Length: 197
Length: 234
Image 1 (spheres, each protein chain N blue to C red):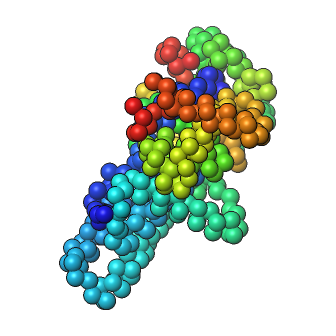
Image 2 (cartoon, rainbow over the protein chains, first blue to last red; image 1 turned 180 degrees about the vertical axis):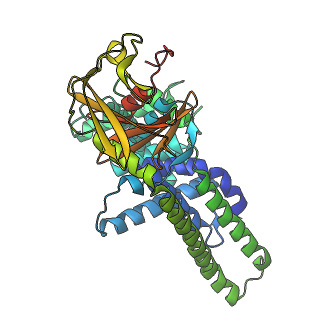
């Protein structure tokens, strides 16, 4: 058990921002979400039970995101105009195509079903281990593995404009889980994480 | 990503994991201010918190948040007032022109430079994309917006249509907002207007705007940043 050191949090801003972008699909919303997350975390003294800072921040980010979305669904919708767009990244990137590519990828992640999106953001964007992601999202580790596997598949398919797979039956889902486990264990597989070599 | 093959699953994971997208500096500043504020509050209270302190713990962050929001609102108001001038209007209006109908016939390819059309605004030529990208010139129009002449040429490729506008006179800025990307020293700004992607940048001090229907931002950026002297940019 330890007290969260506020000074150590600034190192996580960029990573949390990317995670928020993946959740919201918009850089402006991501900025708001990160700011709100930090405001919550810093509002009082926090005691962590053996968790690392990033894991804790992910939990708060997720809860804040879900709360905001529930609140927003009760508000009337507004449409942004050209003047409403706030400068998202004053630091230009070296390749315009790369900026757009990332923008499309994050936008596509944000369109995933919530469970898949959370899994992908927790592991691929934030870099949590499967165990940490499972704890942060309060699901079993095997569930995270399957969701991540399917999330990646869907993002790749959507970026390739492929038709999405039809709803699966239970057997097919078990097949996905097995394939995801194999992929996770395969050396050099596409599912590396902090708890897999 | 229309003109490139989409990433495979493993490339996608690699891209996401290696992404070095940084949070905006303004966000870093706000959060650092929050952390500093939190650190300064907690130092004297450490170890012996009274009931008053406990109340302060919940109240002061709110005051700090209100302060931060007020500062952000002031910054936003300044930004809006700065961007509300003629340059922003030109971006919006020029973007609107790129989706209108052509009023003149298509300009021809320049006889002296095969990467340009035979039409220019104060020495700034319109590109000829037919040879390199397969986008043929389909028409042109000229308008006057806020006392500035705007010339727009139109291109099409299949069902896709793009308008390329050049505003006469020196543009004080290329507006604000969107995603800023830099290519060979030129900053390109990608925005959305009425649901369509818009790219703005400056060429020899002239505001240029490219927009179109059925075209994604990456394609617009590739077209806008194309220079026939850079063979890699295709």
